[in-house]
Amino acid sequence: MQTHSTFLPPERTLMGPGPSDVNPRILNAIARPTVGHLDPLFIELMDATKQLLQYAFKTENALTMPISAPGSAGMEACFVNLVEPGDKVLVCINGVFGNRMVENVERCGGQAIVIKNDWGKQTDLNAVEDALKKEADIKVLAFVHAETSTGVRNDAKRLCELAKQYDCLSIVDAVTSLGGIELDVDGWGIDAIYSGSQKCLSCVPGISPVSFSDRAVHVIQNRKTKVQSWFLDMNLIVGYWGKGAKRAYHHTAPVNSMYAFYEALLILKEEGLENAWQRHQTGHNELVAGLEGLGLSLAVDAEYRLPQLNVVNIPDGVNDAEVRARLLNDFNLEIGAGLGEFAGKVWRIGLMGYACKPRNIDHCLTSLQKVLK
Ligand SMILES: *Cc1c(COP(=O)(O)O)cnc(C)c1O
Image (cartoon, rainbow, N blue to C red; front, side):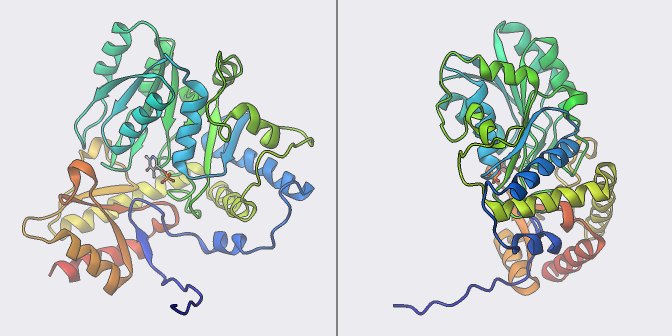
């Protein structure tokens, strides 16, 4: 048998589609002593976490809390709680994650009606409105705010207005948007939203914050059928994460990951949401100027590019995999490969959270220059 020893990971610079570089303050927090998941001090931390999360999402929704699992579980939590067999859901697809929403709808027994737009393009608002007009009884409009697979920002504010206008609930994927670009849950009237810990919050992976409007909570409480997932049934989870001192055991929260997640939200609060958004925009402008200086071009229109996820066209004759391998092995730098229709055609350079800073941008540009030469 092989002899095993402690795993000592190298110090990479993470500039892909997530996880992003974790702030050392957060790594420090996760290493603190574990307490019981019903310890009064841990319950205080849960309450404080909910408050900071309301700040980050810009919401007063009472049902705002982290799910003890990655972003995909937050996605599933929104769909399994709001979609019942036979329900119609309009799903906007312009990348990988919209397709996953369709999977979720179908597994809930719902009927997915799909609006498809090209990779690298925004969801077409007119097509969404036409579909909402045509099909009278659509229950939910679902879309991805920041499409990590293509680097496109969808117009969440207008899409939520359309949902309201046609009396639908909205489900919004904010995994890559939270903390990176403007997001206003109450201002935009979002009904159900989920995010992830490891993108612009720069926390360790494995936590998915969610928030549900009172309108969504009313729908969840008045379902005709049981939520088919026991673990993600919000009616049960609120017994553990809900208000008040009387918490009931539902599952064992990942206690130390919650220390980390709280610290990440605290860092965001200290910086200020608007400042964090601005920092991502400034970093993006610097990166783009540098990339263009190297003769590289971006795949997405400037008007709806994500600052935190930059999709770069791979020049003709350049070996995609070899460049990424050299960046990783020689420069300890991770950037992302293209997915789906973009596979082999683009690189995805993340500027997420703690990773969005001048030192990383310089490191990325100088390393790319050396490798491309
Ligand atoms: C990363 C990501 C997810 C999935 O999150 P996991 O934590 O990997 O489960 C979902 N949606 C978008 C837009 C993402 O970028």
